[in-house]
Structures are given as structure tokens and as C-alpha cells.
Image 1 (cartoon, rainbow, N blue to C red):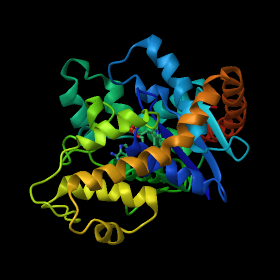
Image 2: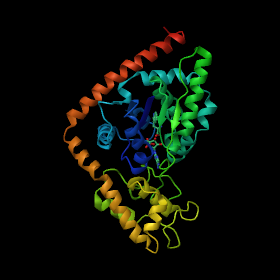
Image 3: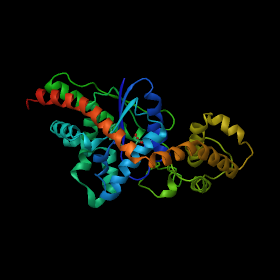
Image 4: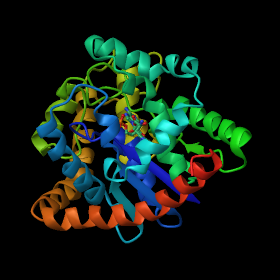
Length: 325
Ligand code: AMP
Ligand code: TRP
């Protein structure tokens, strides 16, 4: 299969991004042709600081590498450095009905969060995402659950293009995990873990052991005493159990058994240990790659060259089918 996915280089990458998206990438790259992008053109649709963005782009590349994306197996590149993404997005915008974009949940949420920053890039965000995916004619897109609606639109646009201009694109499917597709906030387990929320609400992949322990120990739990999975009655404990289970490869039932007659605080202490240990190699590799910025830039340059070959071929085909050249 051809796989495409991306993450916005905005601030920290958290455990939700890892468990929902990146963890799947690492498995998929073993047997598939994978393209993973740092989607900076998406990042600028919400308020940002240009100086920080430059650093965040490099840091996101380091995160991909530290998490195990292998540049010998997968293409890693920065979206804005392959201009075909913007061009294809424009071409798709001409066949995308406004109504489809207005109803997107992410657009509505982000418009509410940033009332004085509702730009047309934010509205067209899913069309650029469609261009990202179809430029590489991907079969499948590993993402968290919040992106499913955008993937539906991608299929709609692919179908519409094919009907209007002749068979060109496949309709890519989304790869969404059963567990981990939606990791919730540590401070408000009814909201998804998000990097635009308060730092206490998420665990960054590179938090220090002390920070991780502090955040988990103060995570919101529920009334009652039992460590039991119950999404409606115990959303806080259930979210922590999901994280425990995914990082320790044990089922939630097995973990519940370990904590029968034990307190929330004993459970949290143990979870903090699990998270600290799991993330230890990430912290180590991050330090290593951070000291080798030139090497990381070289990987991004090579990724760009490889991505460009595929992107240019698709754009030529599209231009010609649309009567542009
Ligand atoms: P973003 O940070 O919005 O660029 O998201 C990058 C990837 O992480 C996308 O595939 C999202 O669906 C996924 N993701 C973001 N937040 C979560 C979460 N709380 N739980 C699971 N996956 C998530
Ligand atoms: N929109 C995605 C998010 O917010 C990021 C993204 C941009 C993406 N382009 C993509 C994800 C292409 C998968 C494929 O998380």
C-alpha cells in the first residue's frame, strides 16, 4: 500500500499524537511505501510565531526520527518545500463546494477558539490535506479519529475529480486504531488531548520523568475508588487505563486485576513509571538528533527530492486533464 500522513509542527507533540498516529506509522513502514510530511502550511492557519515555526519544523522532524520513522524506508519531508501541494490544493478548491467546508467540525472548533483569526486558509484546510494525500496517490492514511471527516471529504473530492476529468485518483481509506484513536486530556477527560490546551493536560513525548510523574499524579480522576474501565462513569480512570494498556501491551482487564483493592494513587504511580520508561528512549534519541541538526536537514532535503519526483508526475497529469497544459 501507499501510505501518506502528516502532523502540524505546532508546539509539542503529545502522547495522543503518538498513540493515535505515529505509532501506526512505525509498523506500516515495514511493508508499505510511506510518505510522512511535516505539514507547515497547515500550521499557519492558526495564530503562530514565524521564529518559533522554523524551530518547530526541525523539532517535528526530530520527533519523527526519535519515534522510529526510518528515513531509509520512508520519505520524510516538509510540505511547503514541495510547492505542488499548494498548486494541487488550488486546483481542488475549484471543484470543492463551499458548503462541504463550512460544516467541518475542525473548522468550526478552530473558528471558535480563534475568533479574530478566521481566515480562508482555515476553511480550505481540508482541501490542502486532500492535495497532500492525492498528490502521492495514497491508498491509506493513518490518523486519529478526529481526522475521519476530512478523509471523507478527500474521497468526495477524488470521486468528483474522476467524474469530471477522467479516472485519476483512488479513494483513500483512513486507518484509525480501535484503541488510542482518541486519547483524552489529563485535566478534562471529556476533551481530547490537544497541544493547544494547557501544558498540564498533555504529556509531551520529551517531558522529563519529573514532569510526567507530576502530570499523571495530578490527572483528574473520578468519584469512587475502584480502578475500573467505564467510559461513562469513570472517564478519567478509563483514559489512564487506555494509556497504561497501550504502553505496557496488557489488556485493561489485566491491569484492573493488578489494582484490585488498591488506591487511585497507587495506580497512578505505577502508570507514571510505565510512561517514564516507555518514553526514555525517545528522550535519549531526541538529544542525539538535536545535536546533529545538519544530519536532520540532510534527511529532509533527500526526502524533498524523493517527494518531488512523485508530486511533479501527478501535477503534470492533473494539469493536462484539467486542460491547463
Ligand atoms: P495534529 O496535532 O492535530 O496535527 O494531529 C496529528 C495526528 O495526531 C492526527 O492524525 C490526529 O488525528 C492525531 N491526534 C491528535 N490528537 C489526538 C488524540 N488526543 N488522540 C489520538 N490521536 C490524536
Ligand atoms: N489535518 C491533520 C491534523 O490536523 C494533519 C494533516 C495535514 C494530515 N495533511 C495531512 C494528516 C494528510 C494525514 C494526511 O492532524
